[in-house]
Length: 407
Image (cartoon, rainbow, N blue to C red; front, top):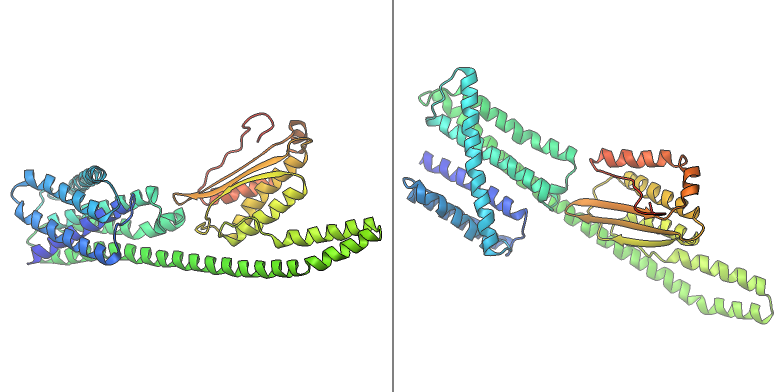
């Protein structure tokens, strides 16, 4: 009975890691209830296959691979041959981590002068060590290729999160050195502790994933509410502005009829300034980005600078608001100042998009070479601040001349 429970635990870990691996590259086909039923079915089939082919490894390996592929094809939105290929990669990964676990045991026992033969409790500890290697590799794959909330954590947050899995690996390795004999009654305590640590790792990851998913949904709700409130306020301002429009036009008409052209021109200028404040032309679902971009866009328009903007939904941008302001304001200030020095063509190309959990930011602008050389020392502090923000979040940046008069 104990062997069955332990084998079932290993199958559960492998099945969970398989689902996490496929979820990195695809989406579930069905609702959560159906996903749970599919997961239970896969676990049951895996258990049956393991026991049926226990003495026939030649048939067990392709059967397990095919079972993973068929099950994942039913669970995720992908083609069957894609599921076969990814299933083969995952099964190969299972074999690699097992070999790695046994190699670690041989190295540890050789250095400590222990026996390298594997039996009893030691075999279970090595298997658990392999499953922890598998779990960490899957987490790293999701970190590199994943797009969900957990995978968009900063590097510092990820390092904190990985402390417990790495600690578990060291604990199991230490237990391998301590447990020298399958006959030792004390070996049961490390085994129970090791199983508990591995289970806690999976539980903590699931808990963190649910918390961050809830945080994302809450943030999306708050953004949608703020957006709706902003639209209501904008509508109220526009309604008030339009309500007074007829009276304002009547006033302008009266001034023109009396040939007070200068007063009419000043009155129209005031009307244009009031109207400009009403419109918010840029909306990224991020209130700080909206505020900076709309302000700089209006400044560029008033300076006769053309602006081309490419953006998408930035509501998931996980950066401190003051850092967002420093980054965008300094880059756009430099671009606007450079364009102001140009005598003919003045244009800024701005791109800020979120793709695969990463922010891609690009600012291009026209410039005058002679004036640039004269002013090149004026924005050193601003660019240093930009550089500090980018590097503090583990980002990369480059400043280069694309072609003549384009920086």
